[in-house]
Length: 252
Image 1 (tube, one colour):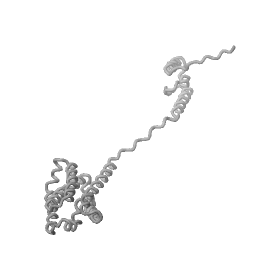
Image 2 (cartoon, rainbow, N blue to C red):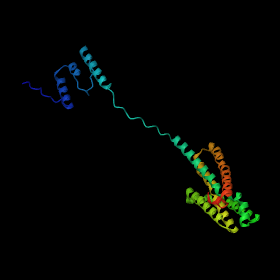
Image 3 (cartoon, rainbow, N blue to C red):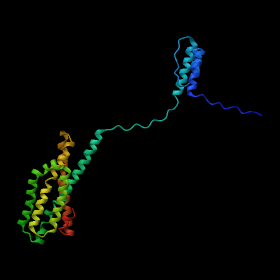
Image 4 (cartoon, one colour):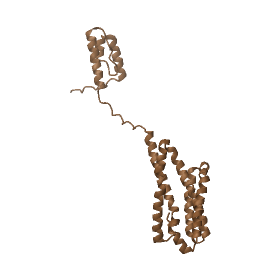
């Protein structure tokens, strides 16, 4: 009966190192270098050609082990570019403020479109219509002197939110009344609230641009006035023609 050969357990790394050290003490250095375990660097020798050949062979084995394919390293993370973040923020802020200021004209232009409708339906005289318009412009001019300074105390976002919400409320009051005095007071309040928008938007934009580009950027940004006025006038005329003049104030 043939016995199967016994499986011998391979020596551990520590045992291999100890065996190599023992062999190094008993045998010539050149023979030991040929059988050095992996992880030990080949030592240079100067005693004869055999030692040099053994050193070369050990170095060749080490080079072969180093040439084995290594695990693939993860791809390098894309370098952080702060300038790209700034450009993205500039574009986002410019777009938001441009659109916001243009939309605000939808609560300003309807009155100039529906004056004839108000005069015919409520019996308001031309003088009273002129008074209502003057109240808006006077409040707008005076409001720009002190309302923007409130942003330093209450915060720019809070003041802009109050201005937009208050302007919407004034338009609802204006559209729902039949009294010419209420019309005048509602439109006066609307003008006061509109005064906050332009200087605060400019204040928000200015720090994001250098002095060399700020003028040209703000020059393009101020076209939001003309774009907003054109769109708001056309929208108010369409709504007043098809749904009544009051809806021109309710829809914005």
